Image (cartoon, rainbow, N blue to C red):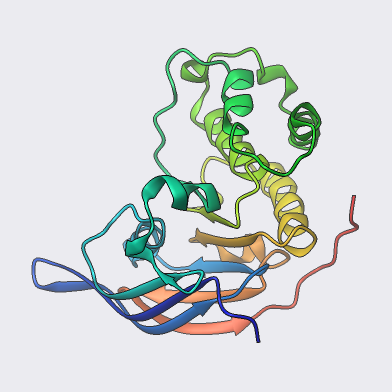
Length: 229
């Protein structure tokens, strides 16, 4: 078996003498989609914050690519890991087009950037937003654009907190198909949290339940196959 892309050993995050995260051992493998399900305040967002280097105060070890997470600079790490947070403050002066093009500045795929953007804009049906200022987007539109940004950035790992946030059922069906192909055909590892795991049963490779900061179950999933288009 190949080395995991993330590995957790004896991870504990405490606040006011209370353990908010307590995970003994866990591995995240490449090219799989992990759906982390849990109720409010179960530790889902905190786990993603720890995996994304947004929170450095913890006990235990987190490895990324067999190297301690603490050994990476934020800049180097962010080239490989893209985090779609629940709360996002948009750049004030940029249009959606400016923002998407800038997000590809570090893209090393060798593909035509215009084609990459046009492709995702078509799939997500958001061409009408391209000349809109990021600051003028509604919460749903901003979330949709931020998801598009994570997809076109082509990271090794895409972290998405509360995947269904601000999305209609039609949006959810669209993003499930896109992320399925991203994971299964392009090899991107996806870790997404949700309070509604049934929305993503056709996407997940591994279903994880978390409660009070502890992983209570891990199950492989059977999912629908989409055509590669």
